[in-house]
Length: 163
Image 1 (cartoon, rainbow, N blue to C red):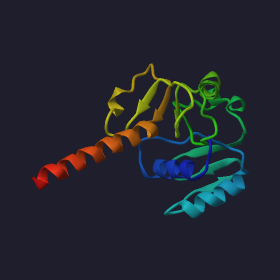
Image 2 (image 1 turned 90 degrees about the vertical axis):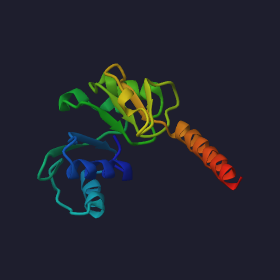
Image 3 (image 1 turned 180 degrees about the horizontal axis):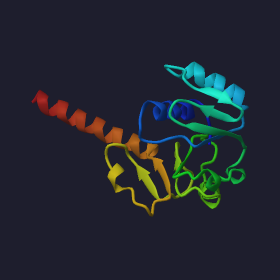
Image 4 (image 1 turned 45 degrees about the vertical axis):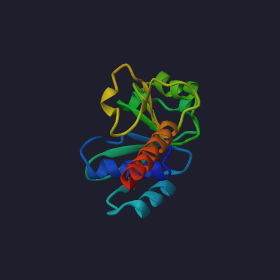
């Protein structure tokens, strides 16, 4: 859900690599406007809009107009995961709506309001994700704490080098 800057960057990442495909995009904007914004962001605008599908050389993506997670039938698209990049739906109940509609896993691009299954710090604990983890988020709040820890370590290192 969400095809703002983060959603468009994820789409471009899918175009440039072979790690994942984007099966469907849900946003409140019209497919024509979203396609226009995407072609302005892409390094090589190689996708076209055919009816409600973004088509490129690798895959076709269904464009949906929906306002809430409860409105999207993810099971109809056979998705492995939904990335909620709206920053609007942050509660566990909102993420559960994606799962109830057929998404096996939800990755939320912002700090959730409630407890979720796994917080991930890229490069630190990415290998700890299990199949049981259905709601996942990057740890922005904890990442700030981790940066503070690194800053403290750096200050300690500088003071040690002065001696």
